[in-house]
Length: 517
Image (tube, helix red, strand yellow):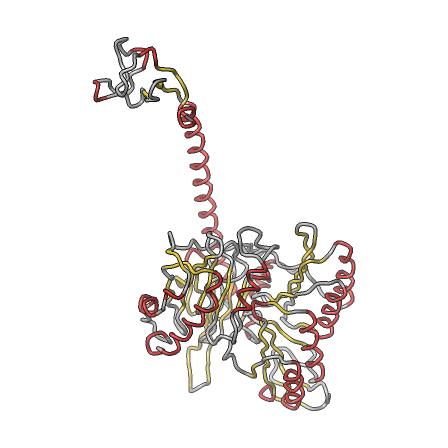
């Protein structure tokens, strides 16, 4: 068994044999878009069991992560090869394609981007990409939009996508000028990836990378596109409660989260079998390191409750805990998360709508409204000493925006929980301002609607011959009739300025009726 936070691990096959952590490797298996069939996952878990793997994790990019002892590696890799499963060992050369498919139909119910469209695009992707690709619905905030290098965000126009390029190893983000058609998303992703890798000096690890240069290099005539009418509006972040058994339409979905990020393989195998028995064809791994099972029938609810009870799996964690993002395979980050969650719970701090990230590695990408970033005050070669923590905040505390300001820098660990609480209070104040602004806009819109309705009911006089309208609000300055002059006060000799019909030929009607006419 692995001892959390420790440096030594007991090998399951030999209780007295102690292995150092360096004798373990991480096997990574991508689930493109976060989608995996229960049959395939079951076979992977059986292979893991043959290699004495008792627990697995899910990663930030919806992939499966298994820690395997060196003596068991040949067994596991041979089993995966026989299954035709692509994997990487202690590497991430081919990062998983991230998508908001897990949210479709349950956490994102508007718009044209359906589960079938996700599958079509993923099927067209072909060989695994080298750069990070995100496929996201703009109507949801459950899945991060811009944590990839090639980020596709659905537009309001059906089957067209906004594109954001975040150049590798930089925080430089470029919004593409055109909308791209669904059927060209995969091909254009491959084309852009090839250009970035071929011109690495221009676009890779270069903070001055030019999006316009890349745009001009792309052979745009080969793709169906249209000019974007306006820049995309990033959705306001609102993390839904993604645990538990929840109803949608006439079915249920189940969200499963583990606070230590470890999922017992026996539990997952039983889950896969229940999916197959109840005709559920797909499972979803989320960017929050949780699982979502959709399409659960009413008659099968008791079976899922029994499964959770049998394996003592809790699905009602506090929102304070669910709102955290921690790097993959990071015990230091999880330990810090536990410390911070305890302080927030003790102070009954509200974190709804706020995503808190913990970053302990220099090049990791963490989705967050508020980022806790660890850094060493002293470095001797690879040895880091005397850690302190910076608290950084995204623009308007929206995690789909880039980090914009430092809230507090150089905090020792003892002061960090309280400083984080204060940052969260600042975020809540910003939320209050956003709510007030939204309420003012809604009130203005309502008032405009009322004003428009009153205006439509306002009366004018219309010539029955040529339909010319006399509106006393404007008068007829060309005929020396000033604005505000009532029609009944105009001389009886008045004639229609267009057809010269007499005043008696004008009829009083509403503005709305003139519009209909």
